[in-house]
Image (cartoon, rainbow, N blue to C red; front, side, top):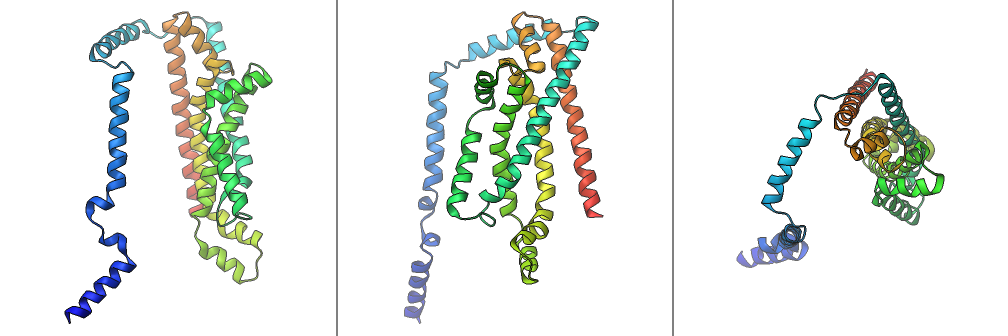
Length: 283
């Protein structure tokens, strides 16, 4: 009886060796990563000249700066109009960049998804292309396009487009791969084509996810469009950078509050739109 049990245990060890490893063996990669993180953290604290004295002194300077920022002041009626126009320009940059990236990434996402791609080579190059686009920061894209098309909001739109194309391509392909196979199999079993299987089996599942991702990206890109304006890509960021350089702190605080209010309004509107569409689909 004991020999049979021993043979059964040996067979299980041979089939599932990973489940019979010691605890420290299974956790060795995680422990090595944790150790590497501690080493990098210690190196950063030492090499980046971080100190308690500098933190305390910086907080004191920050408090003085915040006091000088109040009360927020638009400056004049003319400047208030300039701020409103620049904010609308920022919203236009964010909207155009987001929509163009979503439209371009929608068909490309099918090429990068395992269950809808043409072949493994196409999927590999599509995924690596998205990684390359995402790997370049949006500020770098803005600087590149400023040198290509010149200063202004058009460079900002192209910068957002390039950055979001990589992000949307990855997110859309993952949403396609996460779709349930049963509706696809049902369409194919009734004689439907592969295109019909995608149209009626995958799209209804992924569209709510895609909508949520695009709406969130638009909200996030409103903040990003404010930042890239600092390097000359148009929008409210250009005005904000000038106020920081000239120490117009009260006007700077007004512009910051305007950006916060706009982003909050967009967040509220996108949430209402997302829930209304999802609710309508549920009905």
